[in-house]
Amino acid sequence: MRDLDVLILGGGAAGLMCAIEAAKRGRKVLVVDQAKRPAEKIRISGGGRCNFTNLHCSPANFLSQNPRFCVSALKRYTQQDFLALVDGHRIPWHEKTLGQLFCDESAKDIIQMLLDELEAAGGTLQLETGIKAVNKPDDRFSVGTTKGPLRAKSLVVATGGPSIPKMGASGFAYELAEQFGLNVVAPRAALVPLTFSDANKELCSSLSGVSVDAKVSFQKTTFREGLLFTHRGLSGPSILQISSYWQEGKPISVNLVPEADVFETLRTARQQTPKQDLKTALGQFLPNRLADALSQAFQLKGRLADQSDKVLRRAAEQLNRWQLTPVGTEGYRTAEVTLGGVDTKELSSKTMETVKVPGLYFIGEAVDVTGHLGGFNFQWAWSSGHAAGQVV
Image (cartoon, rainbow, N blue to C red):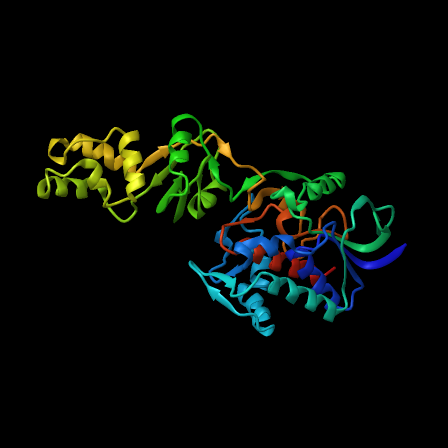
């Protein structure tokens, strides 16, 4: 029976950050993970270069039933604090777009930095260790693992959510929370491609691989970034962003030409080049393949001179305010994160400790705090891990 001050379940971004901070305080810390390698989500993120934070990170970039919950942790360990750590390890980085910071070389640089920090602080990482049972018979937690029993004063759950199950992701954190009587906000896939049926699916499939800059909206929320047509529907940053807000059975609005008022532009073109084909005119806004497909799908044909204002308005409506109702998402298989999780009402926003069970902490993706695409979820991992690490 190994006796510890702090046992952390999950060797990802949040778990390693928490372990580093706790070990710096002289705590006897062990991180266990079922995987063969630590921090697999870091390794595959950002196309292998890890979008490790965002310069513009603020509480406004997060979804939660309590939008204020993330404020304390984000304020006490900011994107600048993590960037200072990266710079201290001389890891080269660059800003891509919209404040997104990536490694110049490899996401493995971030993982190695965390492992080096953990070793220097005196913490230990144990891989290929499954959790069999968790109990609290007295003032300490008793954890049965595939490599023997462990006891700890503080137990930190940093096992994430079920997104990307091929990496071993699961709903373990939710099951453990419910075991200890904690409420869990119903989880669902987020930052995930949207799928369609019938004509819209056929249209998207025929355009698979085509991408455009687009403005995508759901109710009062709008994102403007890239949009990608796929065999099953729509993807790309703007779609992934809106997927976190989308509600089943309701339409999204897609503006394929956010830079222009298509109706006014077509009216002007009708005066200046009346013999031009309407489909050709649409080509000035869109890639030819997309213009051809939409002209056919929306039955937009004939010379500009023959088009009434009503027809031009209909064409503009389809391009500037295309209404589509998804049938669903691609699910956890391709979701970057999980929306929902351990209810923030059950946790202290300053320490991430559960109110009902002293010594039990939940951090990172396991909590009902979900960031936008672009490095925000990693910043939540660093900030929430840091907050717990100061007190465990």
